[in-house]
Image 1 (cartoon, rainbow, N blue to C red):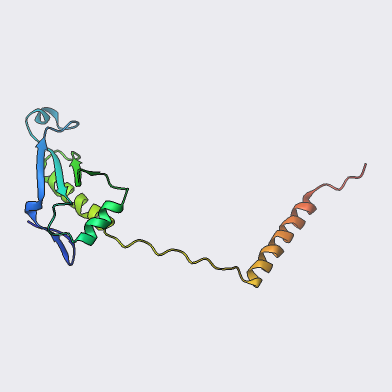
Image 2 (image 1 turned 180 degrees about the vertical axis):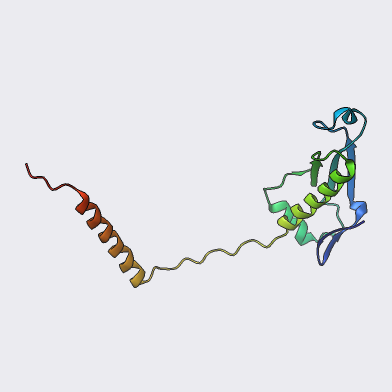
Length: 140
């Protein structure tokens, strides 16, 4: 089953490597005998589905940790291995979607208009007057 990232990008199932181990946490006695913890390892560098541009974009981002050029996701939230597998796939897809997003446009600096400058000064003057009127006017 291929993992669909975008309409034009799909990761083949053979590029996703699975590892299973025993999970810690809830599950009672079942914890000691089932391998419900799931780890996904996706090698970004060796992927044939990603273009060189995509690989470069992923390597530039610092918010995801690449270990030897691989994205590793471990899930042990649910009690069953099947649910953890589904959750791991969705997390991998959302991570890749987030990494491949276009960078936000830089803000173009503008000069404030005369009217906005005038409004700001008027508001400051009104505020100052209001505070001055609050003060007690006792002359000693």
